Amino acid sequence: MTDQRTATETGLEWVASRGIGALAEKMGIEFTEFAIDRCVATMPVEGNTQPVGLMHGGAYVVLGESLGSMAANLHAGPGRLAVGTDINATHTRSATSGRVTAVCTPVHLGRSMTVHEIAITDEAGKRCSTVRITNLIKDR
Image 1 (cartoon, rainbow, N blue to C red):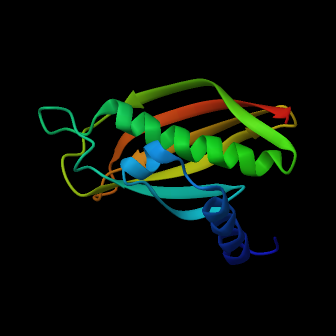
Image 2 (tube, rainbow, N blue to C red; image 1 turned 90 degrees about the horizontal axis):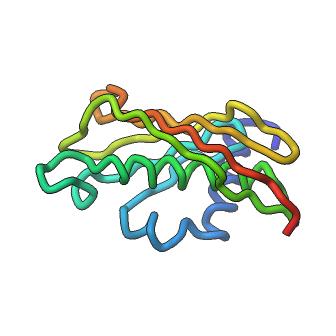
């Protein structure tokens, strides 16, 4: 992968061939960029809220884990599998409408472990949640 456009196209093809999983599909998650150094996805607020109309904190975590785990598996490469071992989230504001956008960047890309940070913002660009996920990489 020589340039970002090629990396993203190849990454999105990889996502399409692998699938995003039933939960991510139910929640309306859409991957828009996918490369080793940056992944982006969006998710609607509607359908992913608490009874009081705020985005559910667990929905932020599902979005973050979907991006972070998929990114770790892309990094792991053929014949290897990344599995989550730790995840945490800090919610700093609540989205109430529209879509949220998650940007996933690596903190550490090792041979046996990855750490990713996922910043989730509302349509105004204000951060709503920060998710951090650690994945163990192992042979299949």
